[in-house]
Length: 147
Image (tube, rainbow, N blue to C red; front, side):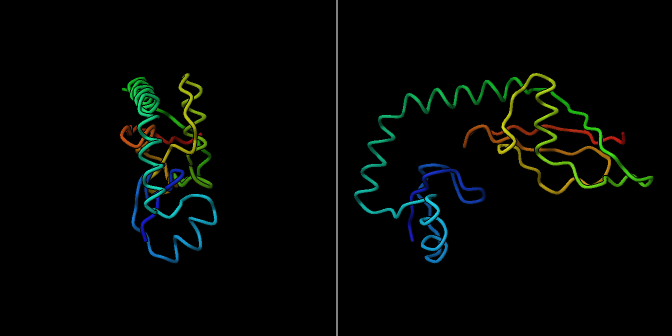
């Protein structure tokens, strides 16, 4: 089934993308949750008109996202965590802690934009991806140290 996303859905697509999903996923989850609509001809025409009207706004959002990504160039975070004697973190380091560390450096980033490839449960150097825009993503290195 073809649907039009009304908001960003992780591992599926971004707002206003037309994607193909299984019928059950679309009808039982995406559409009832208000995350998507069926891609009928009327909906496609409406989408085209909306995108034409929002083209300037979308260009500004992309430029702002590129500026935010450029501001993070060369930033390296150090996050302290309580650890055992073997270097294993009690709990894990997550997007909230990364967002707080960025805020301390003066970079306001929404925690929902930060993605970790794997759970951070040991002391070491890791990489997180910050998706500012569907075409602008920035990888940032952070180091987890023992407090």
